[in-house]
Image (cartoon, rainbow, N blue to C red; front, top):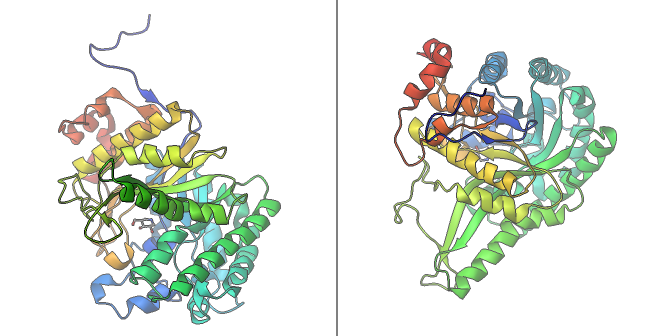
Length: 435
Ligand code: IFM
């Protein structure tokens, strides 16, 4: 006879058996010493606090980090390779660095982890930037040449390819906010960059797809949940439709028919509020007393369901990034439980969500914001490079081990429950080792 459930306890919110559970990183943000990248040159002009330096030193410590992945029970991992290491000069490939990545990926595979590999995550070799970066139409061919050189050497250790990470965010930060290189005010620069990124994706997709037909290819696109502040404001509705089309759908449209899956990175919920000007303003979350991360980004799990439903079509969807910068681990716990509950809801609604990669496995270099934002499931001490598993990492592990969200964790929503107390019973060993 099955043991009856304790009173008031419901069953686990079960995810599909083959669901991918993992976390994501990018090479420049965790490896350290990427001296041939355009970002490196750019950082040298900034105060020391904003320079990546050795960041988490994952270049040397990757085995340690991958052991953590295993310990935390992830069955998948998303990471990237650094173009500027592999091709530091035009057409000159560093065999030593290719070998390094072969070792990295081989090790990850030996742990029986599904590997999702990003080929471009915001940084360019300095020589490419010197020739005009993504504004130069030849960059798409340089990128294709790089991929054709490296992919055959690493393909056996890769399960999914991501050609580009967040092309729209790159254009926004580099040409609109101008806080990333090339930090240029140029409308045409934005247009050319967008089109050249789209062309790069298409070229590389075609190559990878025919060379390695069994390995799905996609991009990781940053998508936002947009809403009008006032239900009946026409101009706010117009702003929502326009921004949804340009920010969420345009790049997919420019690269249509060259995706085997949709990779989506979800962080933002934006409300447009009619203000003094012609175009609505973005409403300030802090003024609305909403729950926010250490970066001031709103915690809005429902938006994840919204973007999944908005983008859902015939293709499988992987949530290639979703995470929170917070030193308050209770907030991180609630984040994981509530956002994953939305993923559960989406799957129940028939949306083909196949995996979730929390951003990020470890704390890392958050671009122009430096090291203060703490996104990691694992805390990094930037002086000693020591890693320490946060209790929230164990909440994620608990979900992974249940292949769903158990009742004991759902209790966190709306209540303050001491995570360590709940988890201690299940993960006494890991908690002890990390104290
Ligand atoms: O750190 C970044 C990552 O490089 C791309 N997606 C968003 C993350 C958090 O800002």
